[in-house]
Image 1 (cartoon, rainbow, N blue to C red):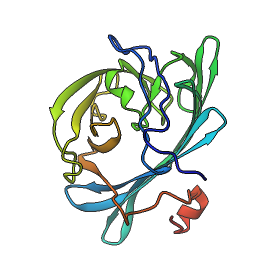
Image 2 (image 1 turned 45 degrees about the vertical axis):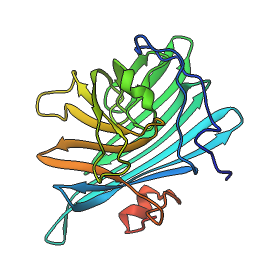
Image 3 (image 1 turned 90 degrees about the vertical axis):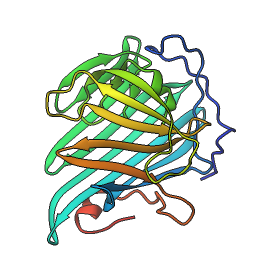
Length: 246
């Protein structure tokens, strides 16, 4: 797979819900992959979040895998797996397929671009038509910082959000120091659900950090540097459930 360089792939993006903004460009990692280590309650390892990018003709393909675990006294108390594949063309999402296993609760989402918008079919909430330029909650695309609606990639919901620019601040882990802190305030989640997600992007627009609270746990991402975890190969649900891990 050829390397995709950050400044060699600039796709114009006119996104609905981005008031006062013009064209956006995707900022991709210097290689074809991006990897985060995930921690809870400060420094307790919880798993990983990995992305891989490729090209098929004019299309940009993003594949993502998340594996999170909470172990108490050597017992697996919680396990979360999420797989996501997105296809982007001319700066817009034209296809998305996700599968999630949230500690035994399974979800599936499929989306395809139509003349009416992005048609979403989810196991949890059925069919809905999203705006054609909707941005999913996969976070790598910094255009999310101007959105008023987002596609929940686990449940297939259209979420109303209010974004905050909290200014220059290093992400969890402190690298890179020149990042900018943004906050997603989710306005349509049920009381008790996660309603704030903190994101960091560097001065080129590359995604470099994330933090949120869920089920009483403070969770944050630290970007893997040279020698860190590689996001390939992507493992299957069956391989993970038997202990296989990339």
